[in-house]
Image 1 (tube, rainbow, N blue to C red):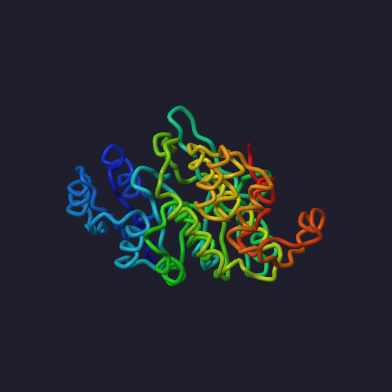
Image 2: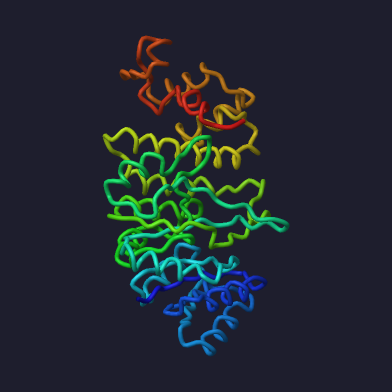
Length: 353
């Protein structure tokens, strides 16, 4: 059984050799190693080609820069394995990681398998915890024990199953089904956009205990600077997941709502450099950015009246019935027919100050 290992690579010259060497050193040797040079401007392309000359298991894809999702999709197109895993170009793995996965696959033949991992900081490692109790889950057990807390496991915000793709292996056909439809434009939540659909489509899951992957925590990858393009991409995973979680099964939809709150908090932190208070920013996610311009005329300070007046103006005064308990208590159960004038107050309860 061959396992393909896809390594997307962009500007990771300082870490690339450690990464690829850890894959080549696997005790499980039936590997198809796909190095995807995503238009890296440093020496990464030459390093990749050198590895391909040394080891016949290594194939290299050179492509124009298109982002992480584009690189993963390009790697999958040439992957030869029965199962597929990922390793980011600045991370590294334990020597027995794929041997452990192979053993679980031989025993259970699951659609997916996952392991724990380390958050690798400069001076210490922190192990992940994903709340799994079995070595193998059938579809019925997934539905009963995993799906209800998959995206959210209290306290806020803890994933029940971390969406990272690099601590998992997937049956190739399952991955093709869920990875290719994801737009390469996604920049945040790109793993969640296909790992959760894979989990929902999977008929079985194997769990390999122990931390086998080292995720390099790079503080410089996160910035407090305002990103004017974030709004265009941050909610793409929600649009994708909505088709899977928009269901009458309340437990699944509750998961979707909590993940939406999580992404909203990231967006709020990005927008916080604007001259509006937190509640205005939250309400603007529902109303659109025009609300921020409107709020700025009132010193950027949110009020219930401000949100109501904006909705009244945009709706032309038209109202609709709204049975949310907050609305019922305050006005008998209605709102203006534009956005949701209660939005900021409804969702802020899920955010951490």
